[in-house]
Amino acid sequence: MAPGVRAVLTGICLTAFANICWAYPAWDNPWWPRDLLEKFDATFEELERQRPPQGPFVCTTLKSWRVENLIASGTEGDRIDRIIGYGCEQPASSQTTWICEPSRPDTVCAGPVLGTVFNWEKEREAGPGQTSMMEEEDVEIGPGDINTVVLAMRFTDDGEEESEEEENVQEDKNKVDAQSIAERGMEDSSLQVVEDWPAQNLGLGQVSGVAVCPAGHVHVFHRGDRVWDDSSFDDENVYQQQDLGPIQTDTVVELDPSTGDLVRSWGKGIFFLPHGLAMDGDGNYWLTDTAMHQVFKFPASGDSVPLLALGEAFQPGSDDKHFCKPADVAVDDSTGDFFVADGYCNSRIMKFSKDGSLLLQWGHPSPQGHGLSGPPPGTFSVPHSLAMARDRGEVCVADRENGRVQCFDIKEGKFTRLFREREFGGRVFAVDYNPDQGGVLHLVNGPTLVGAAMPVEGFTVRFNDGEILDTFRPTARGFSQPHDVASAPDDSAVYVVEIGPNKVWKFVPANEQPNVILPP
Image (tube, helix red, strand yellow):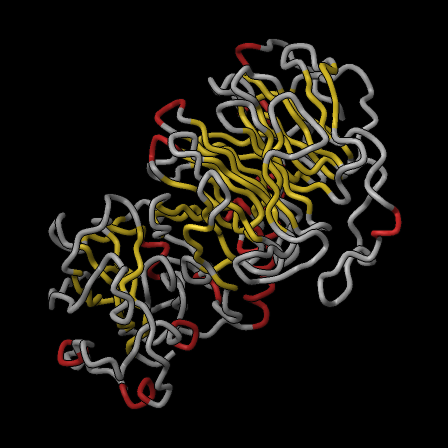
């Protein structure tokens, strides 16, 4: 690799090379501080030829970044001797990442940028083919009050490109890493599965949703005899099995949290393809049906008549009056406003008032070819699950096929923070927020589709800094197809449901369940 500048954008393009990142910085942007870039003895002609479209920068208040993220995109022997950074004028919240785009007046970092340059020098210490190194090293990037945008770095020493043999070594290493993670001792988890809960066979179909009401009872949403498969929808997202009629078994089931015994059930003859389930502070049910392309609110008593129904039955759409396979709902109990993850087709989040009036919407499909860095914030590839962090004023989205959780301000829908870890394995199906322990997320991933297979398991993540505090799974093999997660109000239990096997799992802290014997 020849010496020269390699573009890098914190948060969006942190580990990517110029050929991946140039969709975001704009060389022809009039506020680009080109004079500072020209201090590099780099081959700008090559960069100029790419002439990307104008796009956002990314600001962050972090005072340092892990070295592994900054230099993972080099090759052996590379040496970074300088990083250029620029501060944004308007501060962002602590430990968060924000969009900074001149064409959008609502963005947090309102240019022009400050011309602050930070220098740093460190030898790369990785061996051939390794993609993370020096995990414990931090890069200091300036005064604590500077909201820095890292724009470019220079590799000064020629490195050797990986040979096919080295690539194979890396592939084998990935397999070993995934295997070692999968073989972690179950005793390391503070959450352990409760055996024989529920004790009785509930006869559930695919279990798509789970929620815990204020009283602590567990409520699940299942599909009875219906299965979502390749024949369920046509190319226009129209449901193809209306002739079967609605499901003729109760699709909403309430369970006693201690015993798992059936308390009651309802929902017969209403739904066609259940998906999302949420409950508000009054115990009302919020449900989505992907076949009907609708969102419903039902009373806490359970009834055949909804209190509110949004969308047009069996009519997919992308305007303000329609949904397309809506996935989930989250409710702000302080105002009655609610959010809909819409969903499989529209890649957007919609905010409604308590009477169903549309207040706000944001999001669009993630671009293709975004590389290792991940797509820009505010873009989605199946926004699949929502969690309301009421005490933080944020709503969090399980961005399923992007393998991450994004959080947004509940008032204006502005991006606030991102959770994305290698352990997630590239897919995150569901997320739940609990204010206990200072605020944590519980989330579940799904089967890996690309790359080394990672364990399918649950994670407990600290909300403030994204640190993984715990992982949990029902057996050493992990889950099969987890679809949703919920926690008790006091975080004394976590519940996970699967669409195959059709199962409800309960997890409690290990010190509350001694001598747990796990099934093979």
